Length: 450
Image (cartoon, rainbow, N blue to C red):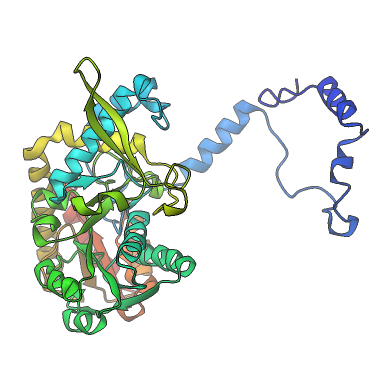
């Protein structure tokens, strides 16, 4: 055969054509007008043997800068964190690696229990009562949360801080357009949500207030004050939280949050050039039947043995139909398992220690960069593992200089915040050593010269 993965022979083709009563494959497209058909050959390379293709793709991959060969200080939603070696050992097992949706509980107990444990740990971290079996990523989870609050309150306005990840805000606007929701963005003050502007934006038509904790710029939002504003007119309070930060920060549930979402990437999920991720979604008990996706519950069989089942499913393909609150059709079970295994391997104390290292190393980096001529830390508010610095030259130019030193620099904020030209968002995780941070500081010092 010419193509090992396309095993249709010429005899097979002729048999199918005869069955259809046509003599040529082109006749299948006879309804398409001749003038709109593509003429000629597609501008793609010719096929090459598998061995040559493997070498070619390896050479292409080798051109990528990665966090194994370079020191990474780029965060902005995807972070270079420690992944316990046991994570890949567990998720690479075929019974987990190939599992999709555990519709048949009698043969899916392992998968269902893994998801149940993930839900339980998310509830413990967030201080919420119910969590679903995961979402596509943190940004999708936030948009789903906004849609859910609009459906619950029968209101059409959602208020979101500009300190929320720019991509999450973009996805929210896409969701809102289809559902006829009004999205109002609130500005920043000292790297945090402007509370005065927020109070003016929230009214009796507001379904929910959405903030990030810590926010996109690394700042730790004043959730207690925001909660009062969000609930003043009986709207709902939605927090997008970094689950690792919740190892040391007071959980949003204790601030009165109604919905807590986020991205589980910091636990056991590699950066992988930006994805895939795993979103989580947790709510108060009274919102349980509005939660998107599905929930795994614990039960007993007729012999009294513990078992696990899909308890609630809100998708329209199931019995909910027109009453569905979401059309999310899947979850990220494999990545949710990776997160659950990572959290289990670390344990409660390990998660706290890992989070604390992020804070301590970030503070060291801030102090050292502040000593540099031409650089300054932009905001005085407390941060978790990211902070903003003002640079003497365009960030893109400084990052090019850092790459020469095998350092992946911070995120250029001017891409999403025009008012923050020459501002860099730097991420410092527990993996960064003192020597690596010192290399960054030295590289920044050299990069300030044109």
